[in-house]
Amino acid sequence: MSTVAKAMTIAGSDSGGGAGIQADLKTFHQLGVYGTSAITAVTAQNTLGVAGVYPLPTEAVTQQIREVLRDIGADAAKTGMLFDAAIIRAVAEEVRAFRLEKLVVDPVMVAKGGAKLLLDEAIDALKTHLLPLAEVVTPNLPEAECLTGMTIRTPADMREGAKAIHALGARHVLMKGGHLDGEEIVDMLYDGQAFYEMAHSRIHTRHTHGTGCTFSAALTAELAKGKPLVEAVERANRFIVQAIATAPQIGGGHGPTNHWA
Ligand code: PLP
Image (tube, rainbow, N blue to C red; front, side, top):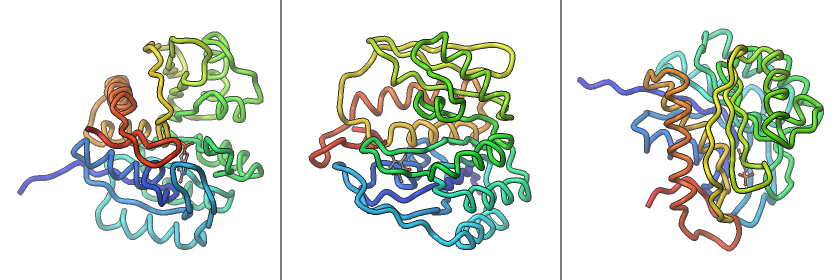
C-alpha cells in the first residue's frame, strides 16, 4: 500500500476559492500532499473583496483539529486566518497537545481590500501563544510592522524586523518582501544566526489574491514531505512565482494565484 505525506491547514474559508482553506487544500493537492482542514471562520467574498466574516465557535475549531489529528495525523501544519484571541489560544493548546513540530504560522491580519481577518486585540495572543510554537512564521512587511511596531521599508529594516520577530520565539522567520518599493523583491529567512536572502524580479499583475496563503501552504507541503527548511522555502518560492506568473483571469477584481495553467 502506498503512503502519502499529510498536511493540515487551520484557517478561514474563502468562498471565492482564492485564499484561505481553499487555496491551501488546492496547493497541498498540487504538491502531492494529502490535505486536511480545521475552519476557523467563514468569509463571504469574491475577487472584489470580503463582504462578511463569520467566526466559528472556538469548540468547533478545537474539535476539528482533534478529530483529524487523533486519526489521520499531520506531517506538518499551517495556520492562516485565526480571527480572535480565543481561537488562537485554542489552536496553540492543540498544537502543544499533539506535539506538532512542523508548524508554519502565516500571521494573516488584513485582506488586500482592508477587511480585518484578525482582531487588533488578538495580535498580542498571536505573539504570546502561537509564535513560540512556530517552526517558521511568514509575515509580509505590513504584518511584520504590526508584530514589531517597527517601520520596515528596506532590506536592512527587514533584517532588524526579522531579529525582533525571532526574539518572540519562532524558530525561523521568513519575511516576504513583496511590499518593498521597486522592481527587485527580496525574501529573507532568518534562523536566529544567519540571513538567507532570495531575490527575484517583480511580476506585474493584479492577480495576487491569496498569494500569502498559497506560499505558506506550499511551504507546509514541502515540510510535510520531509524537505529541510531552506529547500522547502526555495521550492515554495519557485511555486508561488510560477503561480503568480500564470494566474488566469477569474472574476472582476484581484484574481487568485492558486490555479496552475
Ligand atoms: N480571506 C481569507 C479567508 C484568508 O485567509 C486570506 C489570507 O490572507 C485572505 C482572504 C487574504 O486575501 P488577499 O490575498 O486578497 O489579501
